[in-house]
Length: 456
Image (cartoon, rainbow, N blue to C red):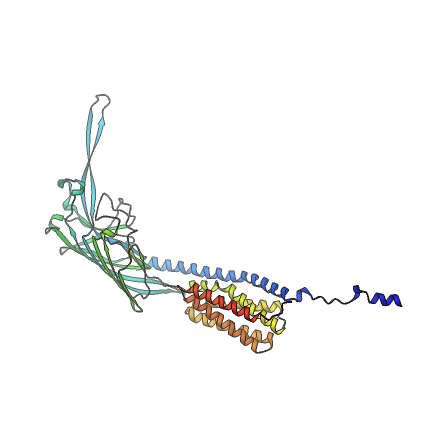
């Protein structure tokens, strides 16, 4: 009997008081963290869906623009004067040792830019819809006025008799003659000349050319200079790019588009932008450019010397959805953290399956957001998706947490988090600053509420 008593009191057979690791706070937070990482997989699928829809939008916009009219690049009018260039070739006869000189004649061209160029540009935009996609298209009237000085060939030492004064013409260079509407004419000292498309092989400027029929410079420039009036109409999309080729170029553009983007080598000297459109003015001197007023042989590539105006939707729906999805990991992580803190404070057990359901509901927010956005505005879609997810998680947490105060706290926290992210998405210049301050405040709140939790 004494032996049995000693055996029963042996330490090896006493019940263990050590806590189970899988019931500890450390194990629970590790599992929640692992679940958060696993949920990044469906979140990445949502981002891929957004990218696919955005690519589809680009394809549709490109198709709409190609049928209506693409972006416009142009410069002109340029005075083109042909001249005869003679070259000599020495031919040596090996048998007779005689050298003969063979002279060949070749027609070359001189290009003269206007001395003064005034441009008045009016652009009327509209948004064209196809299914759920939008594109900005426009009709434009470009009116150019100015004058030419009498062409001077002195810098090239070209004899006057070699210049074909009666075969001069006016040239306009543009990237897309398909976008031009109606006839195009230029009036020189009151006499009208019609443009026709021509095929040119010379030059490095790989754009199409419009050219008038030949005329006699001596009669057109009877007073020593010539005034011109030139109009052209375009159907285009996205942007307009114009090269200021005048010795002094003054341009004014008016449009009903409320959010233009000014780009290119020259920005407007003044601009006024309202909800009803904008007005912008440019003044460019020949001293501001890296090309002169006359060119012999070929025209240079002038695409780098434009002033541009873009007619684009500033932040489209897919860009906003993409920016919202970037905060998905933050939303999931903070929501799980709130539930974990509530679990630690209230001693209520929340199963990993319940965490999974909450995480999937948070991901469903982004699929709801992108699908509703395609049929309405981003703001309305964000409100609908946010309310739906917050109500679903609130009701679900009510069944888990029993007490009403914790579900209400979760609803308020999620609403504040989604509102905070919406504000960041709408901001551009201050997004990083506001986001950093907000995250700092959230971290401080988490540290405050978790300070008394017993982590053993």
